[in-house]
Image (spheres, rainbow, N blue to C red):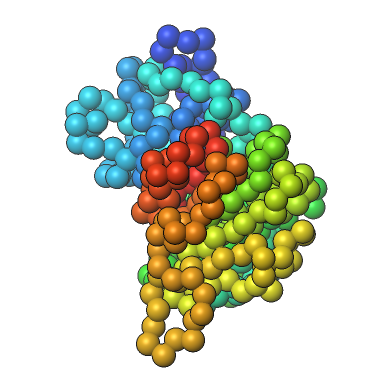
Length: 341
């Protein structure tokens, strides 16, 4: 007989917030499911945004070492809410933040893999279907529990919410990766996963009057495609959105034909792929270099008139953010990003 998971009470010091959190859930997940917001970003222990102090009680951390937590943090009894699971009633010290309060509270849904589309040699789109509606905002991501893989994997949706229960993810192959070995190498069709979603505040802001600039690297393309689909339903300003895509090599560039499926999007006018490593005998005639370097030389003088959405590897996102904020003086409230650790 399966033992029912225990519920523990978690309270935030100095507030009236008290939550019941499942012993198998993270503190972050439990708090968001209760409808309250605390700061977070990567949901994987990498960024340190959800750092808190454990005042009372006991927790277990999914990762013994994580880049988001330093040794000095541990000595001060600091933990990360995204990888901490309660083992008793707890009191924590962290400041709630209304901007992180979820519009759609994260829920766990069972879904089955329906189809696979190869976008590049190592970036494929996987479409799952669930019996429940897919509820999320353009640009958000999910945590997937895949059979045979220890721990969840975070992937962004590249479609928009729908009543049909369709969830589309762009996933990049990782050599030797546990999830990759199942999704890319085997007969994955029909595999059943648990989707825990949605997460992220780097989603489309539909009430903004400004037009969009989307900047992506690698599988960071997925949330940008979702945002562009969402923007087509509620157009931003009068200018057409622009998509900059940083690829390592020419073979990593996403085809124009794929992007032309986005309503109101013309890849010839709105898509700028940038390749950082040009191989010998390459016939590449497009933009070259790193994304932030290209923007330094090519972003227009009217750049403060746009909202910026970014997703991809942390070095790329951080370099672009520095350029936009320090060099271009873009207000921070116009910049929305997720870093993929």
